[in-house]
Image (cartoon, rainbow, N blue to C red; front, side, top):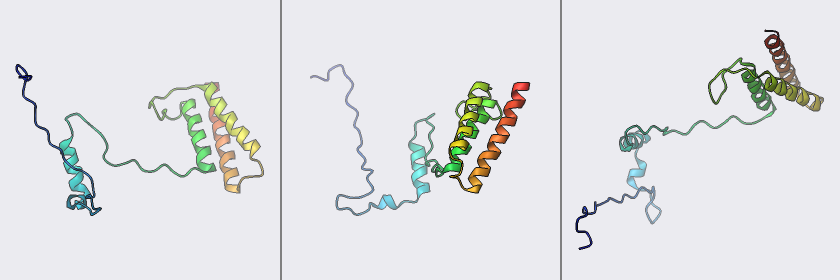
Length: 140
C-alpha cells in the first residue's frame, strides 16, 4: 500500500560490459570490430550529446627545440601574429610579447656553450625574427 497514488517502478536492465568473464576468458562481444563498437556507442548517445570517441594523438616529446618553439608561439600570439591557441582571438599585448622575448634571450644567454649547433641556430633565428616583429609592431 505504500505505492498507492504513485507510478509503478520502472524495470531496469543491467548489462555487463566487462571485456573478460569471471574466469578471465575474453567475452565474444569484446572481439567485435571497433567500427561496430563505435556504431553501437553512437546509437546509444543521447541527442545533442557530442563527444569524441577516439583519443587525441599523444603530445610531441619535449626537448629543447619544442620548448623554444612553444615559447616563440606564445610570443607570436602576444604580438597578434597568430590567434590565441585557447580563445582563437587575435589580440596584441606588447608587454607580454616583450617578456616572452626577454625569456628567450635569457635562455640563450644561460645555455650558451651547452647547446647543439642546431639548437643554437634555432634559438638565434627565433629571437631575430621575434625582435624584428616586435619592432615593427611598436613603430605602427
